Length: 56
Image (cartoon, rainbow, N blue to C red; front, top):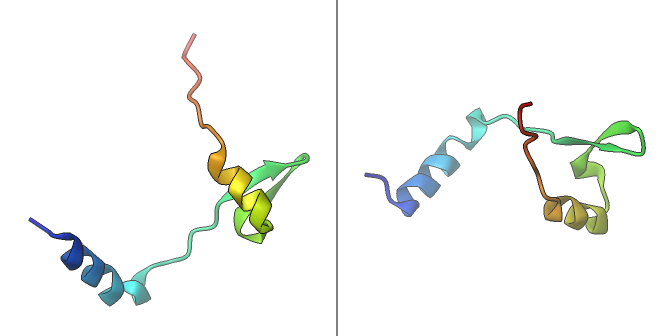
């Protein structure tokens, strides 16, 4: 069983193998990466509620 310290060490040891993941969201009719938002807009994005639409 892994502990939190072991997981943290594993992540830091393998950091060079990880790839950056860009999250895009639709803003004013076009898609834009969240990382380019200002600090206020990033906060709004974190507070958004996600939902799943029920199948008819």
